[in-house]
Length: 480
Length: 50
Image (cartoon, rainbow over all chains, first blue to last red; front, side, top):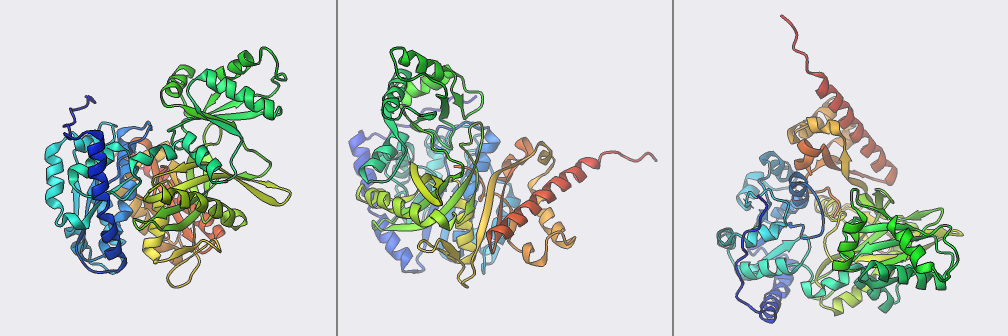
């Protein structure tokens, strides 16, 4: 049932496709300028929240992830904006109403007229972008909804050549990094970037292609630092810690003749972050995609903050936010949620380091949002920050943060590490996209909406908490 | 993330507060409401005999 349909050939060679895409991307510059000048010209935003990543989930989870970006419906606040939102399956109409009801100062029926929900009704768990490319008629339909091709752009989740080809098919630019820069967002690419830009990062070795490479790399690192206890192997394109494995070197004898075999034994029993993965499967992926090995940074007190930045089509680097990630899973590396903003004790430091990478990415021609993950450790009252990866895409912090920004017209002051609303009030949030219980299966989305009203009526939430403070989350949840 | 509710019992939740403690407290309150309501919903099963 999940067999791929043939994807119609673009009829372009790779260099031709790249050139066509580069031509389209130029349109972002005047479009950005006009959006910045707040003119009221009509524009069409095409949201295709495809998870074109190495990520296993069920079809209902995939749909939930695609709905995470429904907060973008708040863009319909601009009276001449049209929004096309594509998902694998249809969105429950009440979920749409919920978002439209959040629109400040807009009559929801007027917003609804400018919203176009499109779906291939394909419940397979393949990327949404692929589902669209397989269906030329659906692409024609999407094109028919775009009024002015000079004033339209595609909003993806991440950007691969599949999203680039979709932009070419639609004939509109894409707000996101050119897939040519994809390598920067791999684990190996991130390490190379940190080294180039003088950003402190864990001891490690990148560009490994086999388990023997990993074993040799560990031996090389042990020669430098014999006391290494725990190592992390990471697949180049792993998402949310799912491609990571923890290697225990505790008690391994000092470097000697049989060291390689002893390390291989330890690798045989490494602990995978993703449940159910076998050693052979993991090694097969390592051979295919490559990866890195690095020292696991730990300490009595350590945290996992991240910094978010964006590069505008004009090439300006903007510092958007910092978060403390809430991690869980087998070895504590799976993204569960976040707190905003990050602890001010290190928020400034990680943003400074992230800005070095931002300047480089701007020179590489990257456009759009990106995030850099760090590990911070407290040593004698001082926090040390190690950069661990660059994510050239939206992340798990994007939706709660942008929802807060859209609802309050506020901004994060990166120097002070504080978010203030337009009225000057400080705000913080805690967000999870893994709030789960087998018992919650008894609920429908309508039940969640009802609790919000019920709880307010029964006085379980105080008056202040009632309005928008706690909300079940459609678009504002999730891990990527 | 409401579309994974029926199959996986999974939702997303964001609590906004004026400071960290307030956001945490509000988050915990919301989770308690979900837990309580789930128990209440599962309790409504018996049909009273006439």
